[in-house]
Image 1 (tube, one colour):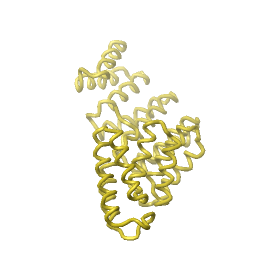
Image 2: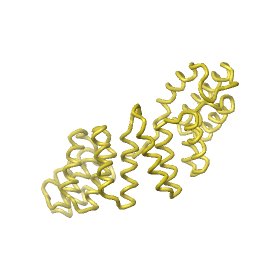
Image 3: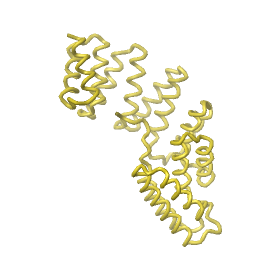
Image 4: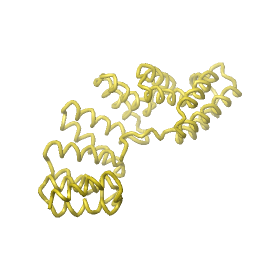
Length: 259
């Protein structure tokens, strides 16, 4: 199953934090000694390692210690915001991401995550603004993510044209980001536009021939369009790829229904 925004950020931010602590006079570091910065980084690195091992409470403690030693450690604030989000403590998460943005106003990752927080709070207008703010930074490495998040929010608001535009832009920026394909294909299916969905899923399966869910969704799209033989071909591919998977079991049932 493809996750739409899996938080695998800790490995990247770990390297960035090591570089950032070498910068003298960084924002938010006034009054913090080099030794405190070093210790703060160590706690952050340990927290990131704990988070990578799904040891949430242990990570939480380490990030708190990192911030206590250096309140300007924005990576620790970001990580803490992530944990609060996972715990459903959205007000606390929002505060941490706002701290990150105070320390670095063009931090696109924080804007993107803040958009997710606002969505959970039912603040759609603010979520849209946050995602759009994330896209203002020309140096943002993964703009396809907020584009896709915007598209999903527009789907919820029934702004179909806007949603399609955002998904298409995400695909243009990064043709190898599967989430945007799945979201656009699902939207086309929901709209009864089977041929358009087939086109999207075919492009995805060409890029990822062995992506199980992509083959399954393409088979479903073919089935909805009435192209039974093509649907059975891709359902059979799913069954052969992972015969014991839940998708394979469903594919077998779909094949039985098509015969």
